Image (cartoon, rainbow, N blue to C red; front, side, top):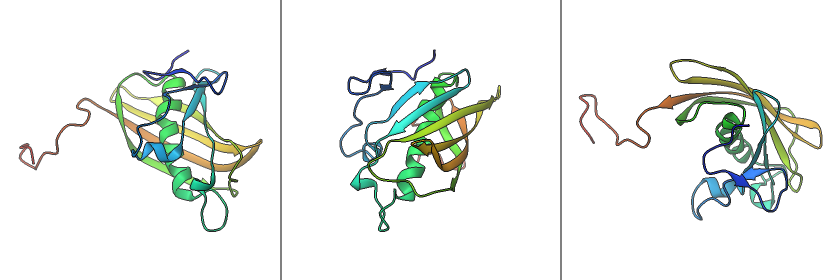
Length: 160
């Protein structure tokens, strides 16, 4: 079983892991506590608990909240599915909105690691569901980087 660095069994959700609560004021904290667990080899499941703060004007889960959750799921779910340890950035993430997500019902992302390359690319596909009904489908690609949070450089390689 592979878990993301710093993951602990979540005290409020038996069988799930988390990093606890994200720092207040961080963008990640807007999603709420991210839960994750390995599934079968090459697969993992992540979970969020959408509440009124994730709701759009039509009463469904806001698309931005969904896409943020999926993006975070590629990282946590990816590690649980066997993605090599390291620092990654998102290269692309495509989401299909299949059905309206409901507030107040856990949203689970089923993450499937398709391939890792020697050059550090990781390809995923998956879907999100509520109570067994698929709401969203997604694909995504992450890239391993060797200089996490490095300062921005101009075209000549000098720090900006």
